[in-house]
Image (cartoon, rainbow, N blue to C red; front, side, top):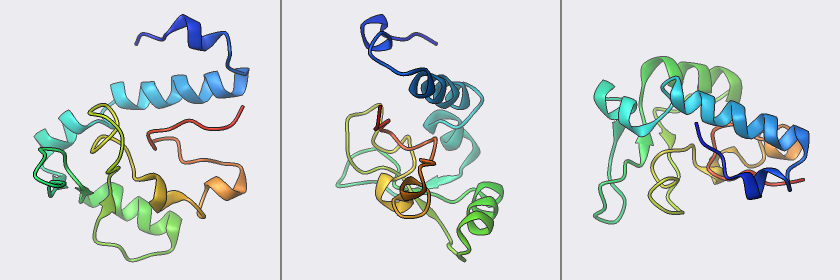
Length: 114
């Protein structure tokens, strides 16, 4: 993992820990390359090659337990550049479930707050 040292000096310890955990999760397999190899993503946004839905059985089961839903897919991010769009959970999906409780979903594409 590589981090931009100019950004690191402006981050609180809490934000830095979240950033490191987020990037570690990508290294451990929460990323579009592994998802595609395992066939757990579907769809494409506006003719681009970016996936739009995660349909992996185990991840979906965990999501449904945590959210109390019976979803058949989890929306992937449809905004941002190539490193964000289709490679993170959709920010709008998780707003209201975790973010408003001060516990943002780790695998959305944006880290907000101080």
